[in-house]
Length: 126
Image (tube, rainbow, N blue to C red; front, top):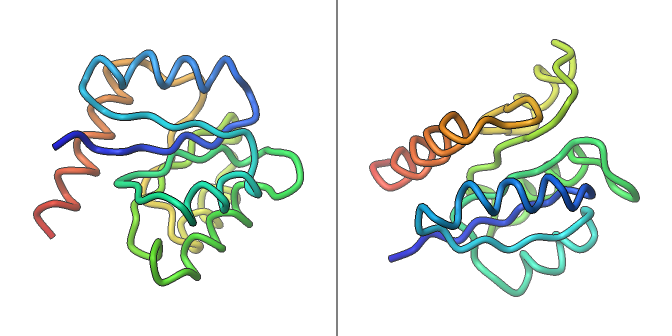
């Protein structure tokens, strides 16, 4: 069964890039541009993985991650942060809030696909 992935990023280029990498692998990709839209989409759908930018308008990625982790429906959904921010403090903060993986933009196709598959396989086994 195909896996559903939500990409939350305010940059349409990144949304397209991630979709371009993952759709040919059989993943079903949904996209939105901010944390408010993500909350609405997550409330209506079930996702196997959420790929989340940190720097977004309205609600940043860390705040969005915190909301995802506080909801019963999504508390165990893996979240990959995809961001240009590779500051150690930010990485550690993301891990404290429950990030599963942390990837620096722009992602490379093979690396992103391998990480996504590893996360989803880990989830299936656990």
